[in-house]
Each structure stands twice: as structure tokens, then as C-alpha cells.
Amino acid sequence: MTTSFTEENYLKTIYHLNTDENGTVSTNAISESLHTKAASVTDMLKKLADKELINYAKYQGVTLTEIGKQKAITIIRKHRLWEVFLVDKLSFKWDEVHDLAEELEHINSEILINRLDEFLNFPEKDPHGDPIPDKNGILKSQELITVAKMNIGEHGKISGVREHSKDFLQYLEKTGLTLGCEIHIIDKITFDGAVVVGINQIEQTISREVAKNILISL
Amino acid sequence: MTTSFTEENYLKTIYHLNTDENGTVSTNAISESLHTKAASVTDMLKKLADKELINYAKYQGVTLTEIGKQKAITIIRKHRLWEVFLVDKLSFKWDEVHDLAEELEHINSEILINRLDEFLNFPEKDPHGDPIPDKNGILKSQELITVAKMNIGEHGKISGVREHSKDFLQYLEKTGLTLGCEIHIIDKITFDGAVVVGINQIEQTISREVAKNILISL
DNA sequence: TATAATTTTTAGGCTTGTCTAAAAATAGGG
DNA sequence: CCCTATTTTTAGACAAGCCTAAAAATTATA
Image (tube, each protein chain N blue to C red):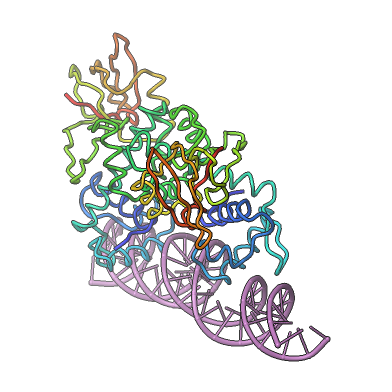
């Protein structure tokens, strides 16, 4: 059974919302994320439920079925591999690849994506530090915490981001908060949640909002 | 003004039919080529005419406007560059890439395609010998003739094909009639148009149908 | 040149994915 | 526990692209 471009986007969105918030995903959350109206989402949810890609009970929110989850993971695999291709081979910046990968992820060919994987040397992470599922849909995710949750004095390495917008990534780039950097917490401002961090011998203050979107491995 | 996936396919088809047959392109020819019904083609022609991508007068067939032609050439550029990528970088065979390129050609990004062009080292031909338009839409096409039009005793080099189906390309592969081979005409059978050719010291008979679809540079 | 055959267009309908407006269900506060 | 606010669903519409059946235009033929 084939899944349309649009159906794939819904599955991917539900997957992300589910792992971000764990529990069931609400109609409104999906409509916000996809910039469509709630009524349109309801229509699509019925369709996806008919295809047994989601578990859906009226007014109760949705979760992915096993098949739906595998489909979502496949799309994510494609997205992330294309991002690696764009950055490693075509010298795009990490803040430029999201929209392009969003298109490329819908190209349907298992052979293509496995060849691409091989060509890229089986990368384990995409340019934003997100893990790339292997060809069997196995995703080995590392335990990461946000800078906001670290305590004063703790050390760690920047290993991912929770926000992929161009604005955010360019800000990180400009302030030197890039993937792989060692970071330590110098101080936390209780008033507004800002965090004073040290990176490359430099002291820097980042807002709570930023701190919540940088992922660290200890 | 954006052009949809479907509109792009119509433009590309009209372009190919036009250069193949030169003159105006008929509704039926398009419907055959795209495997849609003539009535659907008429609908789309009206739409493309409104957008000033084609010149269309009822019952008189169509031609591309300059803008339409540039759009078509851009799509063809993308198609052929992706084919080179698939063959050169991902080790696909020349008979395996057409359908994939058909999908990839609709990814919309001038930067992407120019970076890809550079990454592939500005190839001039795709895996089937078709010329690749440059970033300004300039297409330098070589004068090629079909094997069917060659005379006994003439020599030449296989430089292209007029048919891109898997079946045909696999047949060529199997019989050693691949791109770049030197070929000479040993005999022509008047009865059925078959041609006896010599390639790599081997003598071989090919049907008229095959002879019409192999392109030669003298 | 009139009629037959073919090609093309019109008319009306269907599906997918979207929308707005209104109704129904759920959740929260007193 | 009832009443209000919010969330979700239903109902009805619309655009894009496709279809079938029938009408109109063109081309071919006798």
C-alpha cells in the first residue's frame, strides 16, 4: 500500500510529536506543526486510521501503529541521509539543508537510499547530531540532556539540537556553539533561567530558550 | 509563478515531442506519452496557456513559449545531472536510472542543482549520451544520425540512444552496443531494414527498430 | 465535395487535501 | 455538579488533475 507525500508528512509529524512529548498526540498539535487547520487534520487522521498506520479514537488523540512507526522512521532515515549528503558532498551549511531534505525525503526507492548510505560511509548522525536509523529501522539514540537541565560545574559535549530553524542554527554558528564543542556550566541565573557557559575558554550567557534547545552528552 | 509537478511533466513532454518531430505538438501525442486521456490534456493545455508557458489555439496543437522552453530545459538539466550522479557516484546502471531521475528532477532548488553540477565536475553528457544544458539553459547538441540512416561501409561511434526503456538499454548492454563503441556498417537488408554491423571485431545483425534508436557520430 | 473517420474539446463527475462555519465532546472552575 | 472555555469533529465547499461520454472540429476518402 502506497502512502502519499502528504500522508508521509503527517506520519513524520506524529512521530516527532510523540517522541518529544510521549503520550498521545493531539489534533491541534499536528495542525500547528503542519500549518493546517484542525478540521483538515481530523480528515487525514481518519484516512491514516483506515490504513492502520495510526491508532485513533475520536477526541482521544493518536499514536502510531508499528507499521506507521516504521514508515515514519524510514522517512526520517531518508531525511537525515540527504542532509549528510548536502553538507558533506555539496558543501551546504547545517542551517541550509532542512527544507531541501524535506523534499528529498519523499523520493521513494529503498535501493537509492541504501546506496546513498553506503556512498556516505554509513554515517551515524546527521549534521545536527540526530541519529540516523539503519536500513532495518533501528535507531540507536544516545542519552542526551538539555543545557537547561545541567547543574553548575558540570561538563559535557554539544551533541545535538532540539530546534532546526535557520535562525537558531545561525545563532549557534555565530556564537561558536557548534556540534562537538566541550561546554561547562559556570552559573545559572534563577531570575530568567539564563545560563552562563564556558566554551573554548570563552564565557558566554545564553537565554533559557536557547539552553532548552541545545543537547549535551555528559 | 510556481509550476506544479504535473505542469512540469507536461512541459517536458511537449519539449521532447517538439524537438523529436518539430512542428506543433498534438493533444493525442501528449496523452499517449503521459498515459493520460486526451480530455485531461486539453484541460492542462488551457492552464499552461493561461500561464503563458505554451502557445495554444484550439484544435491546432501547441508549441512552447520562450519561458516554457526555458522551464523545460531546466527540468531536463536536472534530470540528466541526477542521472550522472546515480551512475557515477551510486553505481547504478544506465538502464536503472530513468525512473529515479524522473522523481528527482522535480526537486526545486537552483543552488542544489548547480552544486550538484560542480560536484559531478560539470559533465557534458548524461549516461545515455544526451547533452546536459548548462546553468544558463544553453544546450550544445551534436549532430547525430541513426544507424538506420548510415550507408554500407560507413564508420562511426555510438554516441546516444533515442529510446530510454530498460528493455532496450539492457538489450544494448547484452549485445555490446554500448556508448563509445566504434561501429561500421557491413550490410543492409532491404527486405526488413535489418542492418549488419561490426563492433569490436564481431559481426552482428540488428533489426530496423533497433537501428533507428541508436545514434552515431561520424 | 459530401460523407465518414479521426482528433479534439466540452460537460459533468470523482478523489485528494485543503478550507470555513457550526455542532459536539471534553476539560476546568466555581 | 453544572456551566463555560477549549478542543475536536461534522458538514459543506473548493482547486487540481484525472476520468467517461458526447459534441464539435478537422482530416481523409470516395
